[in-house]
Image 1 (spheres, rainbow, N blue to C red):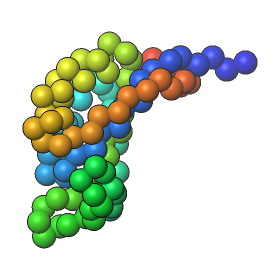
Image 2 (image 1 turned 90 degrees about the vertical axis):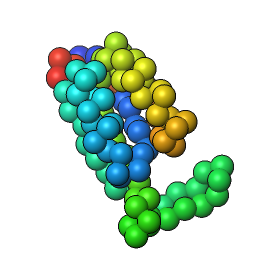
Image 3 (image 1 turned 120 degrees about the horizontal axis):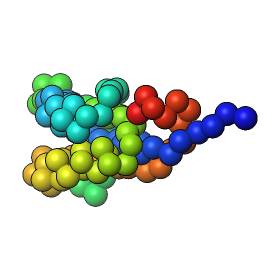
Length: 102
């Protein structure tokens, strides 16, 4: 039987122009990796939006998986930016194989 380990999966929705701040925070939290996925449209409490390259409001998801202590360190770093810069930060438990990689 394959053994799994519980880790935190983190999704951060941010403006593309701010990705470097997010990835630097991930690195500072000693999380080993991340993936960036473009987002083309969505809807929130302020209504529907679409990708807008001209206005510089392209959005991306930054995805990562980390041990709980590192995930919480990342959350602490990004918390001030959530309101000021409009980030959305989601985190939940996932089961992974090869937990030492995360």
